[in-house]
Structures are given as C-alpha cells and as structure tokens.
Length: 229
Ligand code: IPE
Ligand code: MG
Image (tube, rainbow, N blue to C red):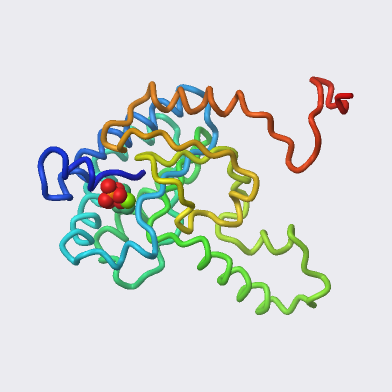
C-alpha cells in the first residue's frame, strides 16, 4: 500500500493525512477482494524498516491501526473474514493496539471466509531468520531440511504462496515483503497512489493477473497441461 505520503504532498500535507485517507481504500479493496472470491488477501501496512520514520508518523500509524481495527471489526466479522496479523513482535508496539489486534484475531479466528493478513511490523528476512532459529531449536539434522520442512517453521505456514503482488504508486521494489512466499508471484505496479486506489483498479489488477502465462520455470502448456509443440 504505497503512495500515502506523495498523495498528501500533492494535496494537504502533512504526510499523515495520506495515511488517514488510506483507510477508505483499505475497506474498498477488502470488499472488492471478498466479492471477487479472493481467498487470501494480504495488506502490507508497516515494515520492520518503517520504524525509521519520524516518531510522530510512527505514533500516528499505531493509533490509526488501532482505530481502524476497532471500527471495522464488526464488518469483517459479519463477512466471515478471518483476520490475522503477520509480524507484530517489536516491543515498541504500544500495548493498546497490540491488545485490540489480539482481540480481533481471536474474534475472527473461526471464520471461514477470506483470510485477511495484515503485515504489520513485518519483515520477510526476519521471518526467514526466525524460521531458521526455530528449525535449529527443533534439533532436525541439516540433511533432513528441505523447502517444505523449512517453510513449516515460517509464521502462518498454512498461508499459500503469493500469486499476485500489487504495489501501488509506481514504485517497483519488493521492500522485504513475504520474501519466501513471493518466489513465483506475478507483480503489477499500478501508478495510482494508494489513497486513490479503488475497487475498479483492484479488479483491473486481477484481470492483468489472469492474462499472465504462469510457467513456474517450465515451458508453455495447453489447457490439458500438455506441452505445446
Ligand atoms: C505507504 O505510503 C504507507 C506506509 C508505509 C505506512 P508511504 O508512507 O510509503 O507513502 P510515500 O511512499 O511516502 O508516498
Ligand atoms: Mg512509500
């Protein structure tokens, strides 16, 4: 979800007004994904690197996520959306937001609709390092480690590989997002800034994804999975 600061700079600084405007987009995209039958939606809200931002902006984002979690909890629950938070390990996260987030996770844990993962205080490299630590602690012999057993030590190991990553605002970077899970993801980089991004933009990204020919390192196949001549 990129471009909040630039959106604010173009209209009404300070940067935080862009974060406030982003909330409308978040709800619009959740509704659009849910309506389109997306089973897993992940939103990258705050990275381990975002702690380097000015204190005022970090505090604002902590408060915003808390207010948004409280305000939208009934809607998500009514839609049978299961909400998860990926990351959330840094001791700098204030107790209030941490508690509300834990409550929402518990409230929606049995829901069987779309799974909405909010990556908050998330870093792909940190997840891989933590998985390595967990693996070593489990005492598994080095030769017994393969990709499947390694992935089982990542947070939320039931999360499927990422199919499509949408990065708004025209920036073309991974920025430490779910590094393990994006190995074969398709990427789209719509130029629109996140606060201006709406359901039709999201649907256009899904159409772009459907037009992609995913080969996973193989060669083109026909509808029956046979190799094309
Ligand atoms: C994304 O918008 C929101 C967060 C990372 C919290 P930015 O804040 O990165 O906006 P730009 O990149 O400065 O425009
Ligand atoms: Mg940015």
